[in-house]
Image (cartoon, rainbow over all chains, first blue to last red; front, side):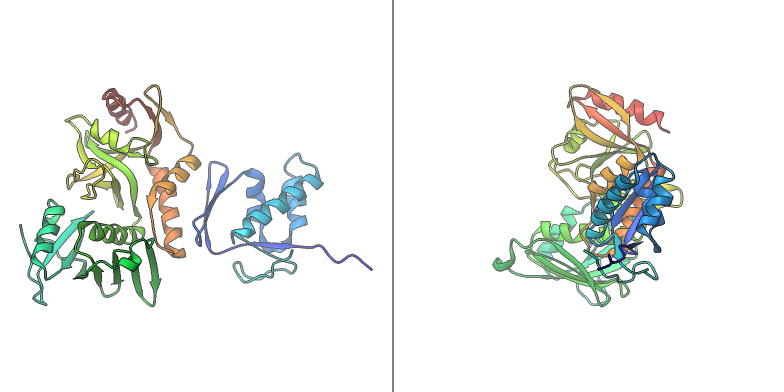
Length: 109
Length: 278
């Protein structure tokens, strides 16, 4: 059996407030007021989460190309970040491209 | 003390905090007297109220005494509820009603909640912080419970004027951020003076073994500020506005970490430091 496509797409929720502060990104969930501060690498992923670029492509283009990090480590860290932010509703995740930020997306395991 | 007659004939008191006059109408003369005493210095007869509330005094509801505060917006109306009060407010109509027991704490809580909602749309906030006016500027002292907010208020020199020992009132005007005195009292049980003063410095309090002031990174300042802002509403739009205001405040107002020994010398440092931040 062929392996299914592992492409995952992420998009920023509209139910947030965010602001770049001193090289970091501060994000607050408008739903539960949880506050996150993203470092430079996480900010790069956050800003590229447009719903149409697959996560692995974001990691390759925005993380591996800009920071000294092994692709496997970068991908693992990105998956952890996406899991954390999506659990608070800050990122929406889908196995299909997501049109329109904040639109409902099917969660993938 | 002034009691204002109203079109409905029910007597009322206009209480102006932060430049936002609110009329409370209640038929019980004893409760009117209580309001006038508690909010003395903030009662006005000259300002036209922006909002009006009718108060219905009720016996205590034993079943709901321990209920946590809930602030919800639905169908054009805010509702605030806790064990000892229930209030509804229609912002568009400028009117509301409060059902509560005849005690000063319930109306105080309703007023605090109301002002958090009003301020969220006016680039302002209520802050768990004591504050005082000194040298024409307000210095604010924020921190967790036990950090020293009341201590800083108690140690203030006679040249400083207390704005509050409990809840600071901050509002953005075209000229910048201003702190207002409030009648919301804490451990000192002393209401603030009804003044409006430009905000000079926000100090984040830590008790320590020496008096010192340190710079704070903007991200740390925003996080600390958000942790100290009073906000009760489950409302995405207002949460976003509060976040934006906190970030803007930190961009415009110096936020510093103040480690201090609880004696009067800390104020010498505060006065020197706040003057240097102008």
